Length: 144
Image (cartoon, rainbow, N blue to C red; front, side, top):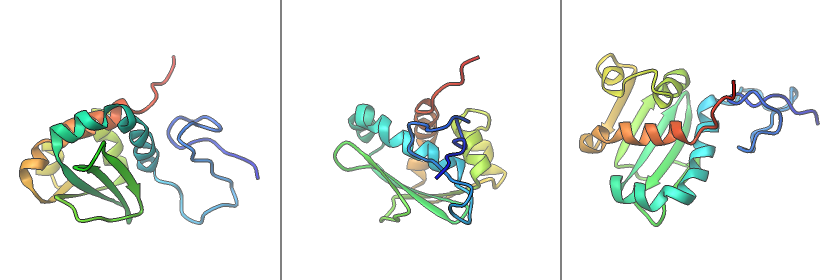
């Protein structure tokens, strides 16, 4: 099977584990999936700190896919494709999620313009910016 580029880093064999063959999966991998896989790695180091800061479960619904970020139990975890009982549910497009994590879109403005929808604990929604920042920081930086 021939690998193609990672949708985020544009490298073959990226450390996120996503490797897509041209003949594989009918639907394309979301860029946000890569972010959640890298976020899972980041939680190994910063999980307890983030659990203390947020103390909840956030379910992200992105273009029909579900990503669960558990920052309530143990050292935190990320589950892809598995929806758990959420304190907060976030619905957003793949492109807008990437812009939010890269700091190119303000979460409050995205919410007010309908690009980001929240359901559940709005107090936790106010802390969403720090979670998105952590997600963005988990991504490898492009080398120029």
